[in-house]
Image (cartoon, rainbow, N blue to C red):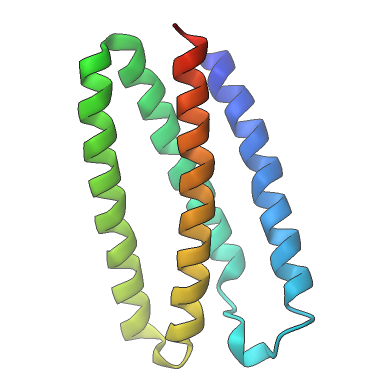
Length: 128
């Protein structure tokens, strides 16, 4: 399990750096008012949440398949609540940047969730 998690984290680091590089390059082509200054913090946040939930998913999968299914459903719901809370808190703190923040947040959400889902599916297939 530790090996699978280490491999995942290495791939996640590369994925996060690639997304950061793309965001940096895109920043040259679109006006600054459409770019949120919180991109580096969002990348760190999504990296941490994705690594943590993948680690917990590996632990749940090792114990029982039925437990993994329950964990996966609960983790998706918990992450959704966390993400909505972050957006609401940011909206109250920084109202001038909320539209670009939400768009960036949504794009990162789709990218990191897809990455994690594919990694979980691959890990399940490898353990069968």
